[in-house]
Length: 373
Ligand SMILES: C=C1C[C@]23C[C@H]1CC[C@H]2[C@]1(C)CCC[C@@](C)(C(=O)O)[C@H]1[C@@H]3C(=O)O
Ligand SMILES: O=C(O)CCC(=O)C(=O)O
Ligand SMILES: [Fe+2]
Image (tube, rainbow, N blue to C red):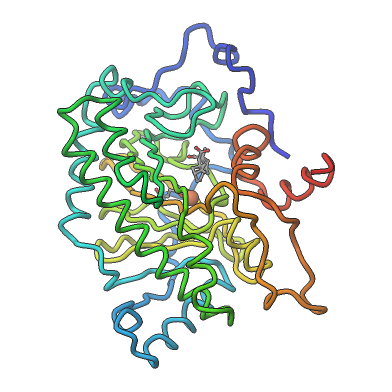
């Protein structure tokens, strides 16, 4: 278990630092002297340019219109991808391209603001949402070269304005337009994720509605990732190697490459495609599929010229839902691989006891056993 670089004492200053480390992108992008906390160990340093991973491009149009042959084809491709590395692309996904463009434009509006203004939405230690510049208060080494704004989303009817309210509450009424766009974007991500859950159900040979119903009242996380340029991109990482602990990630990357996936012992890049979403299986769905579908190690690299943006929607089950595979996926030849758990327990584990680069699901299962949970 990798705990050494997590700052666990909430009041502790940056370890080994005299003055607090601040990641202000407007300065850091011109800095050729990279602070040591951002320099990753040699065996984790990136190859900034990597070979391309050819992931299936799934056209959702036929599935959406109920065409049985197109549905079969889509579910076969999804199944193949999820059994090997868990990454695939979707096109004709039904999300308005103007909405996607606006979501990217408003990221520039937010991240181009002075640090002091972004800090009005500062993510507090122990909280999951808000603005974080490089996690300087959370980790002491291997810091990521990025800023993030994380938002809570829930599909529950009584919280249908949760994102809009967050923007209004933390940044004021002049940010209502951002709130509206990200609320609408999350609603679209929710709809798309639930349709993909149907496809995953079909591809696994369980009832089409099984996973869709499981995630109907999801409590998910929307994350805006902003990676400023770095004059020494070969020394650092935008997002370190990790498995998404969540269930399904629906990611939109702008036209700047950076996403890399670890397959067959090598890092491959996923070429940006503005018309597509990159979808990947997270640890929680790996457990729900009883290990049939893979959650795969991935990371994001940075470059020395162009800022990069990505929008990640992390689908998560409602807090009380027990993560347990459907009976169709468990039998004599396929015994249970992971114990029952709830998403908040796994989430807490990733925040308090574990840094994401090692196999989270295995470490979490062992931790549950060791602690008799
Ligand atoms: C539940 C979450 C925790 C992280 C954001 C979402 C899903 C993925 C997690 C993360 C991206 C994995 C890599 C490390 C991390 C710290 C990051 O770089 O952002 C993770 C997120 C987090 O803990 O905030
Ligand atoms: O920015 C990217 O392309 C990937 C980010 C990511 O993997 C994450 O936020 O979990
Ligand atoms: Fe990720």
